[in-house]
Amino acid sequence: MSQRVVNLLVDPAADGMRLDAFLAGGPDMPSRSACAKLVERGLVTINDTPATSKSEKVLLGDRVRAAVEEAEPLVPEGGLAPNPYIDLDIRYEDEHLIVLSKQAGLVCHPSPGHVDDTLANALVAHCGLAHLGMLQGDDRPGIVHRLDMDTSGLMLAAKDDATQKALQDLIRLRTLDRRYVTLVWGYVAADSGTIDTGIARSTRDRIRMAVSDDPGAREAITTFRVLERFEAGRRDEGYTLLECHLYTGRTHQIRVHMRHINHQVIGDPLYGRGDLAQNLGLLRQFLHSWSVAFAHPVSGETIELRDTLPDDLRAVLESLENRSMGRTEAGERIVPLLLGEN
Image 1 (cartoon, rainbow, N blue to C red):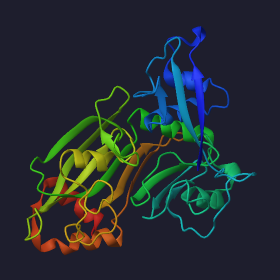
Image 2: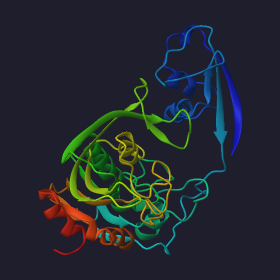
Image 3: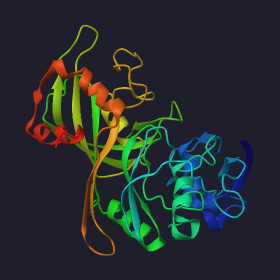
Image 4: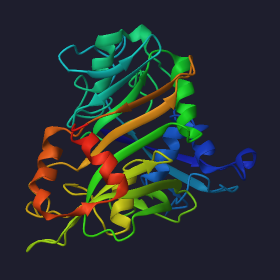
């Protein structure tokens, strides 16, 4: 990864423009969304002061400097390479879309260090590049929404542009029902709740996201309900099993929101607690996309799918069985489904 520094001067025609639009209009600059990400990552200054928001207005005579990162292209000429050696656990498929269960450890689309070993490469092998929606870009064929590398469970892929747009619209309109199950640190007293904040990239660590009231932060809404509580042990404060319902899809949203309410996700390497014993030996975050429901964008049919817990997460729950304080009404219905008992 290399950087080139671009220096721009605001002329009369650009006076009062939004910062991201002004940057995108500069010579040899990337797209407006890419310029907005440069601002989020702290790579843009105005008159030697770090820019704080992509919507900030630039004024006549301002000196804007951007450090534009450039990397080797992740997509080779001719399109993303197929990888037939990655297993796809498909739960529903028709001529328009796929619902699959992603395994932990699989990256959704190419990124530095992951060029041909991603879910996108597997989708190209399964469908063919010409039979995947391309609205997200050449490096994200078929991708509708993402799961973090070490988050497992159900996600959607689209086989054409129209379906991809329709499914993204369902997410934007909050009518695609996505529910996750997570085990968090401590005793969550309320049986249900809503976390409604802004989320932006952390100003202290550019890898992390953080709750923020900055004007450039994006709205993030998560509701949760308790499924089961586990009593405290000699080395911990107990645990709570939650179902979380996403109304928005921000990067690391559930993980950030759980940290915000001081109930970190067990095993989370970025936002959790580092003690292996307190993480019950888990080496990745206990976060699983267990349920999706939506109206099929072509047929109108209601598609509802559920996914049991993978072996590593099931083993953690089984290790806590003798510490259970009882399940809630929701837990009595949902936990057996997660364990494949119904």
